[in-house]
Length: 288
Image (cartoon, rainbow, N blue to C red):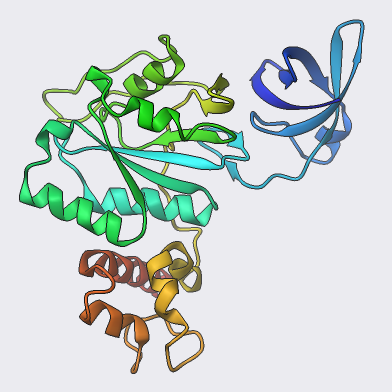
């Protein structure tokens, strides 16, 4: 029988097979191969007397550490337009990590009553110009939730974004019940309190939601400098026109990407962020 691991607790794994969930243990061979089953793994199991054994873990499409889950297909990148104030650098880093992990990113702007602000309109323009779909929400009022719900079918979806932007409220609205405790914004720090502690797949709209809403780590040190451009689809679109193979679109002459920036085909803020990442990695190598 084939299924998907929807929860793991204390060495037991709960595998969804058609219309039932079967409690399973993993065979010892996985420990010997230093392979631990993860939530989201597609597995093959055998069942005896109502108890299952995981015999095979199929190859993972991708894997996240925090939250600990495999085979994510879609991320809802949630940022509030205000309270807490939007951090453009952080937003771009979330999207960058989605691209690196081959996860489709849909950017969700919460608290849309604050949209009529020139700075916020510029942020939205930057994201749309890079080719990302944007959804506008007011999660507390349920506005925009149905639009998100339509995107869940046949996907394993994780919510990501900083604390306090409304991820838990969105997750609870989508699931139709309180799965996650919603946190309050710290008045002193103007940022959200962490409210989640574990990973589990919740079946919603013929798809799955990861109950831990989002990445809790944004370390990008592991991405090589030469691989950064692959995390920027709008840069890759023009990179083929560069004069030199291996062009980083930084200081090289006759660079098609830099020309696209000058012509307004690539948003200047997105390019500036790309250059900051390249410079960080260049300094990191020089300091080793």
